Length: 115
Length: 109
Image (tube, rainbow over all chains, first blue to last red; front, side):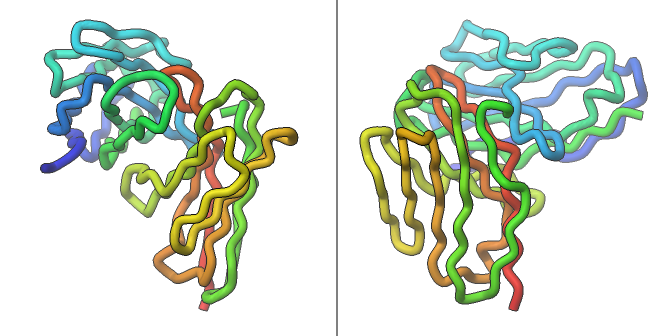
């Protein structure tokens, strides 16, 4: 039981390049999330998927797209990377959305640098 | 996030108690959480408290909630070197967790 896995762990891009960050969970969770973490700012929600087949914008969606490929996988795509997207990206999953003690489980993160 | 505020740094001697403070703004939050992030790793849920509780104790961890002042604290008793990490306070609002900027706790010998 690996929990939440993310690939790649590290990536360096040039401005304007595109890439997809992959996330998979093996806990049969319904909901999945993408966050970015920047120094002094905590985690900010980019997009989330409450259930398979649905996606919604979070707090900072501009410059990103997502795909909920199936129940296990949720990918984040940068179509044209910008230096402002240099950050650490975390994927998380939870059994269901909504308030409650429904814990979000986090992956180890992808450290992205855009030059 | 701007809705949740924490002090950025805390230095504590090994064996002493650590107290990390947090203030939040959303009075409708049902649950409040403390997450721990070790270097190079993702976030790990440490504990949570339901908003109708004042206190929750879990081994070395004690969470205090003052709902009137929207103040949450995490006390770690007998702090160990393995407790060195970044600690995030978070409040829940529907699907969304709003995180503070994190408090970096350094444990010195």
